[in-house]
Image (cartoon, rainbow, N blue to C red; front, side, top):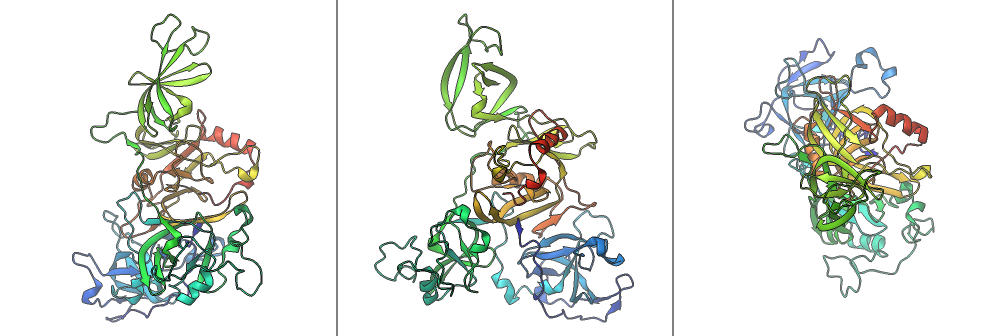
Length: 561
């Protein structure tokens, strides 16, 4: 589930911008156009116009100076074509035209963003209502804005793992007495503390029932199994506490904050968590997908990835003692020889030749040794779509081989391995298989929170999942830094990639993300890249029929990870 994306901006009001010049009637929009008087601080050197700073966590960008209808089927004629093009995150900065469109639907006025370079004449870059943005770079609300994401990758932010059930997520740094009240039963990092001298944090006290007036023992003191907990149970018992987190939740980390009551992490969403409850994620790039069109790159399809930590190089002797590949059936019995160890995630060039010995398939490598199929995976994309336009970009996701290949027309340009949704043919509650079919990327996000309840795993929450590319409802391609099971099913339905590979693909696929934006929606003028999801050796349509026969589509988990 994409947290916050549907959040409203009501209550986030700013004073209307100074009109500066006389207002002019807008004959098309029914409002008036007002020139903006820009102070010296309102524009940047070299900027094409005034610079607008987003003040809301989700600052929508509309295609017209109008709000998109909640139900398009009931919209008035003048709002039927209104849509959200994307959004800015708090602190994002974009160039705008030096004028406001004043309308009754946004008393502060609409700022028109400059179009992307190369856009046709007359193209708009979108409109942002002034109730969620400012031209003043010194606006006090910007002090709480998170750091800009690292768009160079592989991760846009730092991340932290919550280590204890019940860790409080505060709206502000708590006082010492508040920490003593709300954390006296949480002992992680506080064992055997002699004094109250560790960043001012209080010493632990005995565990007790949560003092919320109900008299009930809180879930994190009752030692409930994770599957017995729901997201509703995590709501804070006071306005100070946003949430009581489950062990294993991830937060996006912005900056450290040291106050009299202790040391805290401020999150990318502006909340505070005691530093001692968080293990900072150590980012690692274990492997990188292959840009087949990179200068000097000689590798080509098919490629293999070693996914077993205990993989070896193999050779075979035929029955007569010679060194040849074994027959795939009915021929002389071969003798297998195991040689050097091969590291996990090693990428190997394959010849395309496959043999079966003692019921186990092996793939021949260009180096002359054989890779046991059970110890790795292999690229095997399907045929291009029949209506593929010349030079059209598209993505092939092979669920059976857990591989992904990106194409430019009929030419493969990028290959890697993935982790798609876990399937379970026996228990529908545990069946999170990724749905096959032909899709297009509907929207892209630099990052967004994914959280939900699952019947068997309980609640999960990961703030600022990186490089999200939604293509089928809530199913997306995205980076996953919290596991390294690539080449195997692992997710709740999404197609997981290493953060590095997701970042690489994020910049390659459509829709194009304009500079300064945090998220963008596909439109006719900025279309999304096609995504074909299929089983190994089957078309998307054949795979979809097989999946429909095996599972009721209504049982699909709608918040994959």
